[in-house]
Amino acid sequence: MAAVVIISLTLFGQILELKARSQTSAAIKSLMGLAPKTARRILPDGTEEDVPLTHVHEGDRLRVRPGEKVPVDGAVEEGASSIDESMLTGEPLPVSKRVGDKVIGATMNTSGALVIRAEKVGAATVPSQIVQLVAQAQRSRAPMQRMADHVAGYFVMAVVAIAVITFFVWGFWGPQPSWVYGLINAVAVLIIACPCALGLATPMSIMVATGHGATHGVLFRDAAAIENFRKVDTLIVDKTGTLTEGRPTFEQAIHVQGGTAKEVLRLAASLDQGSEHLLADTIVSGARAQGIALAMVDEFESGSGIGVRGTVEGKRLALGNTALMQQEGVDVAILSEKADNLRMQGASVMYLAANGDLLGLLAVSDPIKASTQEALSELKAAGIRVIMATGDGVSTAKAVAQRLGIDEFHGEVKPADKLDLVTKLQDQGHIVAMAGDGINDAPALAKANVGIAMGTGTDVAMNSAQVTLVRGDLRGISIARHLSDATIANMKQNLGFAFVYNALGVPLAAGVLYPWTGLLLSPMFAALAMSLSSASVVTNALRLRKAK
Image 1 (tube, rainbow, N blue to C red):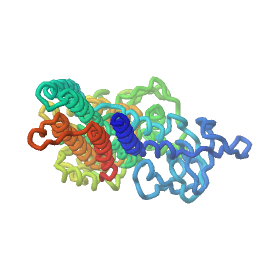
Image 2: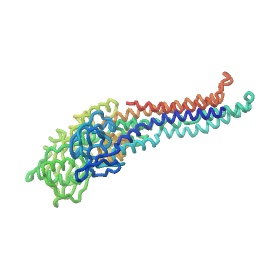
Image 3: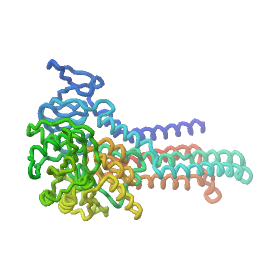
Image 4: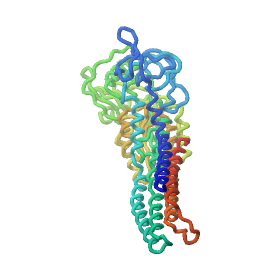
């Protein structure tokens, strides 16, 4: 009868534990269920049909009516609307979308009708990547968990030894029937000391934290990122796409004597057709908006962080910042005053040279994100040192830094310089986080203690980072930091509870109090206590879902 009760209580405890554990993955389940089951495809002859989502291919034109979910990632070709992205980014306000804007699969079209062209389908869509990242993080092991597992190995051996000692001590010196008492108490020790609570203490916290972070637009690549984030004391931020909107607009082109502004723009845009950079896309769009026909570019070469080179119409062109011009041996003094004036207004300036001669410059402005100032204020209040490092000119960097209240800044920084800056700060004993969105940020993102990629940036940046902010909002850093603090505190609570539970339960089960109180712990109660201890750890981890 006692064996039946013990097994029943153990199974009951496992049911409670599994029920609680199922709630830890609720976030990832909700993400998997966001995508619609079908999409409305527009055929070449203009007719429309509803097709399963698995039948949608890149390049398909899809209609999204008001109240429907966007089926896949793509770009708006017709119409205008407001899209509710809160389920992926945590942003409560709908985002306005017009022709040319990007849309994310599984988000809700709230008002107008849209026609989009599919760009990413299946596992390549943002929702699918989020699910993959969350699942990967939940499978990873935190450094604290490795410590707990190491301790658990010794704990099991110690418990077995205590059970054997309990059996023989009761057998030789206990009251009659002494060996029966010895067997019962030894079994109670083995049951109550089951290291389930110790083993669940950290993975449950990690599972809940990663899911909770995903619903607020913060994706952790692994458990180590959660554990390390709270230690960060220095943050290096890129400018374009991180502090700014990342949607720059073309301002003007200035030519040297003997040339024209239109020709400067035409050659620069022709060269920039081969670049992936945001500023390059802005120059190309600016030229096309003026109806300028672009030429083919050959031998294109990207000097990440400083500019690009290539051959257009037989001319060897170089387009970039002062550092690139110095490499090319081009004198920019004739336009330096105009360039400085533009930079003082916060514009990014690029020089254009052909065959070693300066042709002119182009100015592009990128507005600062509305959330940047608030995010920086929160970070400074938390005691984090903020440093801006950008490939833009020193004057532009200074203007942006002054506007945002950033005391330390570096201009005309190459990817290697950002990497060196991270290394230098780490050598000084700082725990460094790097936030960026471009290919030129990837080396520094990989080197930093915590790399933070903007979800609006390149795949290379996101693959190099440990944390991705889906909506590209620096306020996500504060969310990640608070979640890191809450998670580590929760893990310590779980581990503390597991150790205290075992420290009290094992002596009680061994009968240490019997000589003074006559109290013995039945194996049935030991089974119930063991089951409830595991369920308690999981329940405590679930409190992280309310973390802010």
